Length: 468
Image (cartoon, rainbow, N blue to C red; front, side):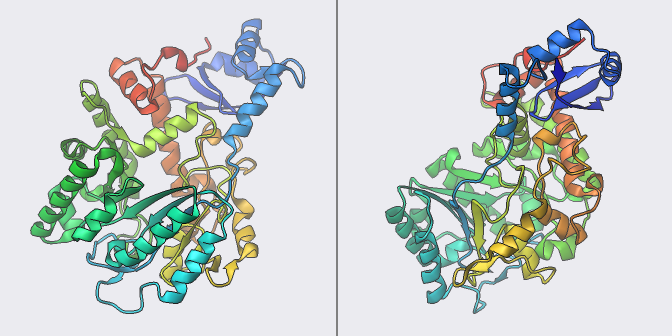
């Protein structure tokens, strides 16, 4: 019998968490660790490891093939380019304190697509090999150029067999035509609501009357379109954050069941104003928020999730869960998604666009006029996976994690910093540690939340394997 290499980490209660490269995991003790390390496995160890898919008898047997299949599902293989972020304007009618996109004032000139950029963008879309497309309109405030949004949407509806649209709007000022545009069945709305009215006013609108107007628009959107078509994401300054219970209550009152909790991003204007303030406090606040969610869900008729924790939880239990572009492995840039800026320049991610915009580094990868610069894309992707990185190969969370080279470049101007010193690694290590603590927690309220977040009827304790 051959055992696939196991990674391990202490859990904090005297036990150890083990995982293999395909994402199989279990909890055991220092006795098993010693037997594994000294190649002195007992017969019971061998039965357990083989039965759980951590070992095989001979190359090519069903245990071997099963492991290979599970490992392959962990690897992200991009399909055709079918997800495009379009920025028809940088102009915005708000001046949020943490803005990360380096906006332009509402009445500024020269920050919208011109006719040539529109035509070249449509030509780019027309040349895609995919039969389905997802378009995300960002800005600035994209509803300021509703004419461009309409032209793109009508083109995509005719060009592709399936088309989906997301409008990322501050939802501050919506015209009758804007409401009509958003009401289409194939169109979704994403906005920002920072947890409660005082925080939203401080960080975004400045004027409480503008906050009241925003909240009225958000309530109208949820009432008309339904919660499945509306997402409202809070941006949190950990040094001035609303209590977790306040955010949960605010979102619950709106009928929203998913909260994507985000710290102020180290990008754009936010980089200059906030710097890295709050990084140290984020993990503590995030964990308190998750515990508050579990308490809320214990007797809630409709449980609520924190989107990113649910995503990471699903990556642990489901190979092939690659839907979030910020957490993939390999995380290949310029492959199945990209950004078209207001001037027609192409970027691999929205964060890369922001970094270029403030003059930190040019991460553009072409333009709608000249096409994709494949040499630049290849250079960016030279270190886009964590499978063989010396800092990751022994990490127990590696099978579920990913890489974010753009974030490393943004924060440290380099991609070769030891991983444990990066914010990406610290943040995800804390998240995965928290998730595995919850998985092995003997608590009905926790299991109720885990079941809701995994979209399964009940969380069976058998999903948390233990080897005595």
